[in-house]
Amino acid sequence: MTHPTRRALLAGLAASPLAAGAVAAGATEERILLWPGLPPGAPKALPKPKVELKSSAVGVRVRWLSGIDLPWLAVRHPEHPNGAAAIVIPGGGYRFLSWDREGEAPARWLTGLGVTVFILAYRLPGEGWAERATAPLADAQRALRLVRAHARRYAIDPARIAALGFSAGGHLAASLATRHGERLYRPMDATDRIAARPDLAALLYPVISMVESFAHVGSRDALLGPDATVEAARTASVETRVGPDMPPSFLAHGADDTQVPPANSIAMFEAIRAAGGPAALHLFEDGGHGFGLHLPETMQAAAWPQIFERFAARHGFLAARRTP
Image (cartoon, rainbow, N blue to C red; front, side, top):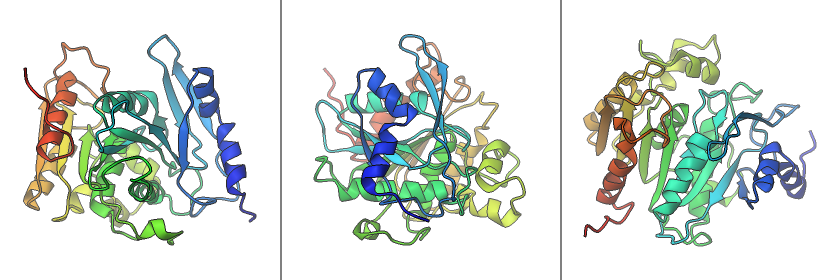
């Protein structure tokens, strides 16, 4: 197989539907390609990038991405950077990426706090990759390493890099926090000698277990395939992978979530505490699934960003807000 040049890769990326949408909106997007060439285990025919526009109303654009052929980080700069950085990982059941609600919206909130944000467009397991079960995690590891490698360029503290994940993206963020040292791909360059452990994890209505009765079957089948073995499912069950080096972890879930039961967050919280790690779990009476940052203030789960800010300040990721 002939590998395209980096210039060709960048040109192809700029021509993608997502880039076209960004240009149409009057935005200039900075992107970092994760891999110096094709990603590991690339199929002969790369998946075709696709953007589904679910809503185009003013202020509520909703896009779903799939066909992630050349995974990347979309960089969002704060007006007043404070040295913290976050990799934001959208969900979508490992079948698509909920780019706006669980990528762009969290990025706007975090940059408002002074955090430099990197939204992760990771490979989807069912799109032909040789190692489907670990392709997203390999992307997440590489992404964390790249952000840490370029800390000086982005004026960030390499010891203040968080991973925030939503739904299936929460599973990926939790997998990164627990399996950051696992070798999933052949090292490409000096970047791959850098630690991939996030310094803080935020898991929002996350998929966690792949074996328990409360497992989200759709995410499990998309990640592992419908004929996955029990051993493969156990390997991908994050609550079984928690160790003593788990970073401080914030979990939030709606008690009324009928898609990904809150038992997922409870299991993860209990595993972290059993390992002696710092963790906070917030179960809200209402919020449902996929609430992101778009709930009305009358719903209890709408308060999670402010609660997270206090947690992040307690663990040195953000500065504590001054009270009048």
